[in-house]
Image 1 (cartoon, one colour):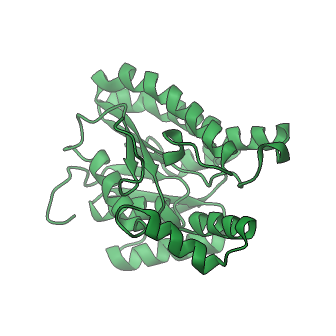
Image 2 (tube, helix red, strand yellow; image 1 turned 180 degrees about the horizontal axis):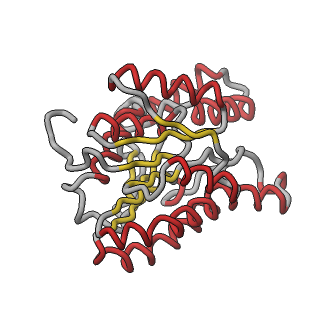
Image 3 (tube, rainbow, N blue to C red; image 1 turned 135 degrees about the horizontal axis):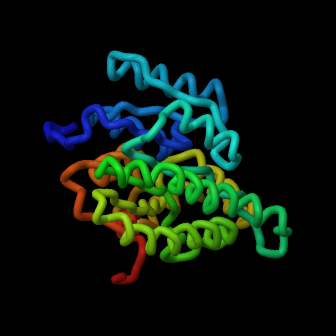
Length: 262
């Protein structure tokens, strides 16, 4: 990738939620770096298209599995398709936006299941094998909301913060065995998820979608939104041999939008 040997050629990578968006960008970057990638998603058509597109770039077939990682059955299917992955990228669509008073207990349980419990269960299953083999990379795609909570995204703010707290402890326990665990915190990237949020903001303010989208880009210090391939490249570096000393970190990719120093 970019002329750099990342040291992951032939490593098995399982990338959850990789039929589109940031998860797909991570899968592409890992595959281009030589990893043997297994894609995952719940939409059969979107997943098949993503696998075909990536196969066309790589020149060989790409494995994929239709499964819902929020269920025990789905997680079992993932690991049947990619037993003992060397690289695990946890990723799930965020819960819907809304107001705190709109959400009942079922909404909170669904958010926790997708954005906290499912990744923890996958980590629990694969990390022992990584420790035994003396090498592993676990990368969780969370959100910039972990550092700066986002209005209308309270479900995501809460669930992803719970995962962050869990990872902070575990990462220090497994590092001596050659396993690193890090979180990637995306800001505003050009994805379907951001388009959905822009539509919700437009509806609440009376602005058009186009006005809202342009305002999002203009408000960033870079004057634009992030490109998914930029996010994927960071994921590949964290998975690389060169990234072996990066552990237990929350890496914010937001163009400098977060105003703090920590």
